[in-house]
Image (cartoon, rainbow, N blue to C red; front, side, top):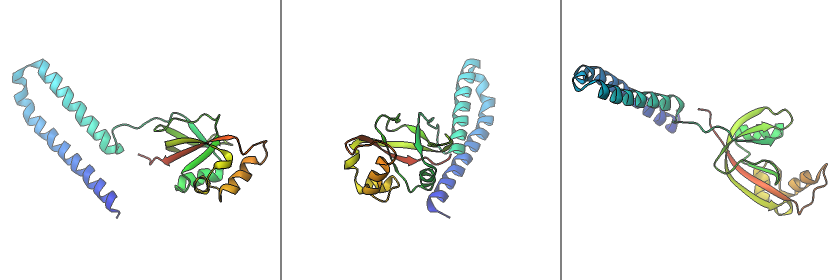
Length: 176
């Protein structure tokens, strides 16, 4: 078993055990708590119950809250498969495309069908001339190299190497 997975499981079960002990101690303390009055009982009891429920949610999901997707990034079917496998970490899009801001979560969608395939976190967005795209960037975007990108960029459209493109760096979000 993977060390990180084992550590995560041990931490989750340890926290679940601690929450269980707090709840049992709460039953004992509950009998003594009536002596200080109704309002403190409701306020402190409500706060403790809220914290316990929040901790249980965090244990179940692996984090306290999940960012909602704020936009989408279009991919071809082949590129969507590379996004799912984690081998594609860049998208090269026209600069006028609706691109989510860095740090936000977006849906990776198949452009032809509009079907979402994964959630990705946008790490960085850069602008560059289409003719200045580097080999490493083109390879991370799923092309064989910069020349293959330029051929694909100009295919079927009147594209110019002086067109601005947006280079979107992203990371696939794990399912929680």
